[in-house]
Length: 452
Image 1 (cartoon, rainbow, N blue to C red):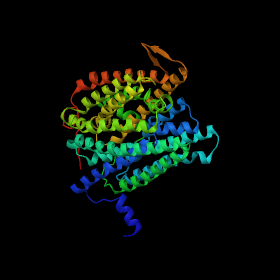
Image 2 (tube, rainbow, N blue to C red):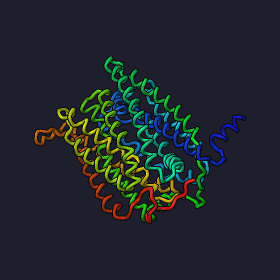
Image 3 (cartoon, rainbow, N blue to C red):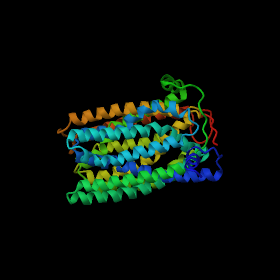
Image 4 (tube, one colour):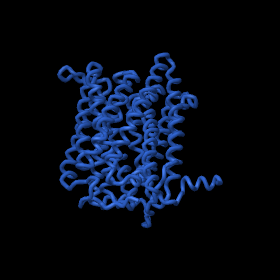
């Protein structure tokens, strides 16, 4: 077979998919998610905060750059205008995946390129933003690809199983790389430690590209209705059912982003915990998630994605409120509790928020709905993170004593995050739960969907 023929058979095949193709592709998506999540873990949170601090960043900068993934969601307004016209989307998704992940890996070369702290941080922000703009651009189509491979009746079980494997394997990756980073940091050679971390990111990026190129792509319906910015911005809002999901994601992004970007920063610069300890806590969180994620999936199949969304965000609200009381004195007691609660919450949140959008959106033109939702949520989330950064900067150097507990600037935004997440839970309970059961089972509030 010629190179052109091989390329066409990999990315533009028109052969009908068999049952075995669907099963193999779902399995490959699990391994794809392992490498993808591994890359995300090693280029975000404590790893990103530590690297940015090494380049000269302060806490405010760290909080803002951690919110870049949310900001980048704005590009999803444009995404549907491209993908809704494509019957075969695999090549574009695969191409963007390898480019943005290699871009994240090559951030390690920034100190070799420029010496100025301002230029280093500007380049870090620019590369991180460019990478996540590409992530966001392909996200609706990539999500739709996975959904089309997964029959509706088994989504809860499949996503529970997938996430349990992903969490287990990525925990091993993060713990191992965290230990390496600590060894080099203790030896006064922090940069070499980061070189090893980011080189591993590049290896994972190449592996991910190989896996995703091997996944079969079901045929998708091409949207024959012309799309433009106006239609992308108005069509989802005209759908009375999907408007509730838009509001849910707005409230969710406000609650998460006002404090969420600062957790990794607080662990590294505020509490000054070692990377190894942070990764052990991450492992504790992952173990909790692995144990519970399949339960969340089964619960969604039995009850609804609405129910699991409400319960899991509720647990996270309690977790963030608890972080209000975490300081250097209480850290070794409350941090493990916080990570366990976080693991229980995120096990349900990840699969619930992913699937609830599909329950409320039609199959045709779905990337329009997902793109609009991500774009609006991203803008709101980034502005909220910017507000959180303002609060952190304004309260820097000030401490408040409450019943013997010292409360610093970042603890304040954690408390605000918990309060706003409680508001999100109240919205779900009053608006979504009272309007019918949205789950893997058909009901009057669910769009019909055909799985090839």
